[in-house]
Amino acid sequence: MSWSKARLAPALLGIILGLIAPGAAEAEGYTSWPVKNRLQGRVDNGQPEKSEDVSGIACTPGPAFPRLCLVVDDETQGAQIVVLTDGLLTAGDFIPLSHDSYDGKPLELDAEGVAYADGFFYVIGAHGRARHEKDSAKEARSVARAAATRKVFRIALSADTVDLATGKLKGKPEIAESAALATMLQQDPVLSRSFDQPLANHGMTIEGVAVRGDTLYAAFRGPVIEDGVAVVASAPLNALFGGTAGGLTLHRLALGKDSLHQGRGIRDLSVEGDGFLLVAGPEADRKLSAAGDYAVFAWDGKTAQPILELPTTGKVKLEALLPLERKGKILRALLMFDGAKEGAPTPVEITLP
Image (cartoon, rainbow, N blue to C red; front, top):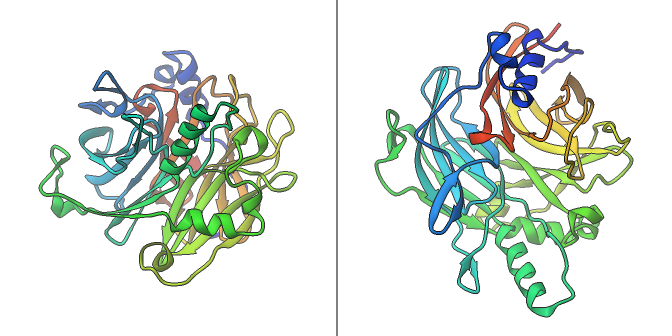
C-alpha cells in the first residue's frame, strides 16, 4: 500500500485527553464504545475481575458488522470472544488456553497479541522473563512463569461456531499449542542474546502478532537491537504448527526515539491492505507517557513510515489497534488501552493526504 505523511484527525486529541480527563472526549462528540457484559481480567479469589489490562484484539475481516473477535488480557490464561458491532462490543465466552500452574497456583499466559487469518485466531505469549532471583525458590517460580508465556496458540473459530448475538460458543473450538517459536528465538544469532533476559536489561518481550498467508509475524517491544531499530520476526506457520523445518526471518524497523531519546519498540501489529499497521512505544515501562512516546506507523514489509504521532496518554498505554474500514483517504480504526477499564475501546479516524 502507498502511504504518505498523515495528519492527526482533529477529534483524536479530544479522545486521548478524555482518557486522562473524563469529559474531554465527550466535549469533542466522541466517546469510548461501551462493552456489554464484561471483559475478563485477572482472577482474584476464584472470581474474574473486570479487565484493566487489555493487550490485543483481532477480528474476522470487515467492514461489515457484526464481526467475530478475540480479545486478550495479559493477566489471564486465555482469550475472550467479543462480537463487534458499530458502536458496541459484546463480551462473550472466555476460552481457556493455558493450564500451567506452579505450587498449585495458575500462571499467566501473559498473552500480548492476537491475530486472525483464514479461519483461525492466533494468540501469542510475551515470551519474556520478568526477572532473575537469587533465592532458589523464587527463581524456580520465575522460570516456570517464563515457560508459561513462551507459547503460540491457534484457535479454529468462525461465525458458524459462535452465536453472534451473545458471543456464546455453539461447540468446543479446536485449539493447537506450539512452543516452536521459543526454540527458534533461542537459536537466532541476534535475538538469542535477549532471550531469558529481563525487559529492564533489554530482554525479549513480544507485544504484537499478525498473520499473512502462510507466515506469522511476531513484533517485539524489546529488545530494540540498535539505536531506534525495532524488530519483527517472521516464521512459517507450518514450522510452528506442522512440524516442518523452518527458521526465522528478521525485519528491522527504524521507529525513532521516544521523549527520553530512547529507541521505540513495537506495542501492536495488524494487517492492513497490502501491508501492516503497528504501534510504536517505549521499550521501558513508564509511570507517565509523554507526547512523542507513542505513534502509529505503516509498514510495507520493508520500510516503516509514521502516519500518526499520538499526544500524551497519561498512565494508560496504547496496546491495540484494530483497522475497521478504509474509504479513500480515511482509515477508521479502534484503539484499546492497557490501564483503562475494559480497554476503553475508542474509535478514531486517521486522515491520509
